[in-house]
Each structure stands twice: as C-alpha cells, then as structure tokens.
Length: 96
Image 1 (cartoon, rainbow, N blue to C red):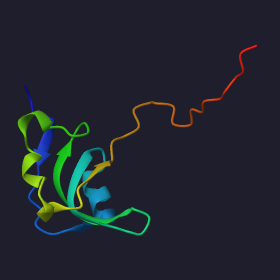
Image 2: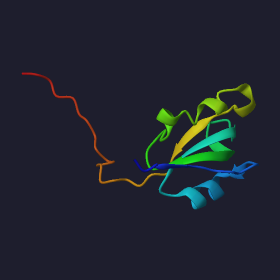
Image 3: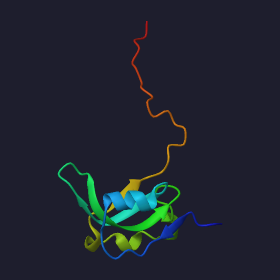
Image 4: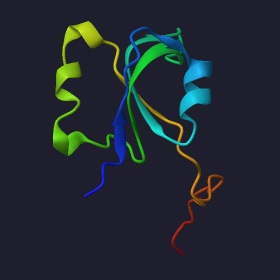
C-alpha cells in the first residue's frame, strides 16, 4: 500500500506563513511550536505531512515526538475544502 505521508527534515522552526506556503494542501505535524497568547501558531518545525490527519500513525512515526523535547506539538490542517458546506448552520426547532 502506498504511503500517504512524508517525513520531513527541517532542523529549525519556520514561520507560519512559510509553513502555509510550503505545505498548502496537506495536513502538517509541527513540533517545538511557538504559540501566541491566543494559541495561534507563530512558528514550528514541520516533521510530517500527510494527505489526511495523522497519516502514518499505524507505522508508529509519531512515537519519537512524545517527549518533552518536542513540546509544543500541533497538528495543522492545510487540506483543501473538499466540498463540505462550510457555512452549514444548525437550528433548533421545537417539537410541536
């Protein structure tokens, strides 16, 4: 079966704008992520990209990042909207 993820070899954090530019269309796993006061991503080291969130979990590729050395770990979706109605709103209707 073909792998739907790729391991990356960045050694230092990249700014979020560069991460978005490089990996648009992928899900990205970041380590050593810097967050702002609103928990927005400022920078991080991209280590895995995938066609789906957490691609490669079955292969155990995330285990090595489960140490304090890699905190803060963040999954970032830069996947395209695949036709889901993003403006979908639910309303409540009383049963009569």
